[in-house]
Image 1 (tube, helix red, strand yellow):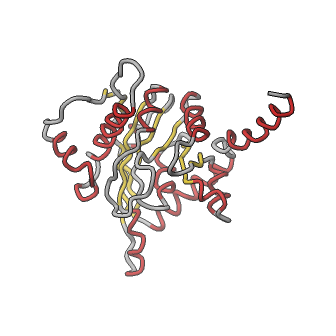
Image 2: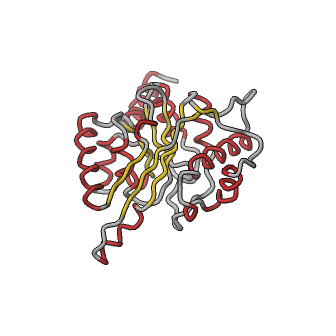
Length: 249
């Protein structure tokens, strides 16, 4: 690679690398604004804040119900939370700017986005707090969808602690049309790590671990939100699950 080519590559890569860093001051200005909006728009209730570690690589496992999901998650921890967002929002005249200020990682849907993956690894290897919706896209039905295996890869690669953050009610914003303020409830579960896997895990093993994460997360949700994981969650609650098990922290 020539010096010119190397220089061009660095210039092209720099904006992608810096997206998740954002503006620290802007983040802590936006955070109380989001908190204020959540309390105005909803009866916003959060349970289990103390379950989020105060330091070290941590992944918040969240379900994806609404465009306001970042507003649901941002106020739950005093730590700075880096979230993921679909790359389509980069060019939005308002949300694009806000998300950049907040320091999100933009992800290209429908493909393995290696730039976003490296950014996630950078956050976790730096001891940061990353919020991920394992389903990868917003649920149109409001119920859980099958997880993508990427979250298991990140957790294993960085030995990150996983914290389930289940929420519901944010999708009921239209209740205001009937002059009713909806309730948005957030329940933060106990932290855990994934079991150790011998050798390099394949796609099937990563998918099994991602499903395991979703079962732990789904146990915090009301039954009507559990979707494709309803049977697995019921088995876990009855003590009938077999095979892999999470490791409490």
